[in-house]
Image (cartoon, rainbow, N blue to C red; front, side, top):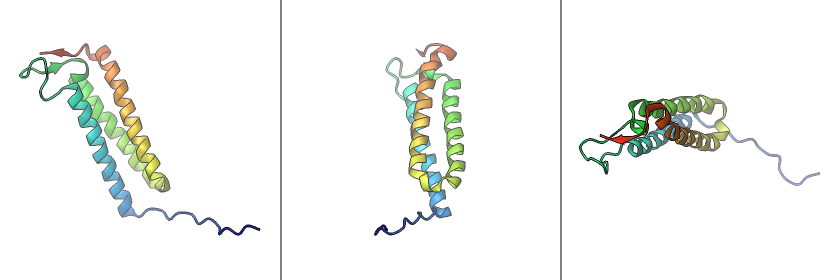
Length: 120
């Protein structure tokens, strides 16, 4: 016989905490996306402060793709959070890693799709 008490399963998270988690993931996604956007097309480019960059990572298609990937992963994470309430921290890490990984891949393939990033 064991002297340890029986393991009690963790209580599922409340709808309020789940909603706060979803909003928190949206905020994290916005921060990651803004970092990509500023890296691809900085506010004050070093080549020409008035012209900026175009093509490659700074192409409109690349920037739009970064936003679409983030929204798609956020929707998947938000829907999954309903069923995986006990695993929210792991789901949050998975969302962040998947989004950053997707943007790294997007950064590397953007020049192949939209041409090289050049200064205006």
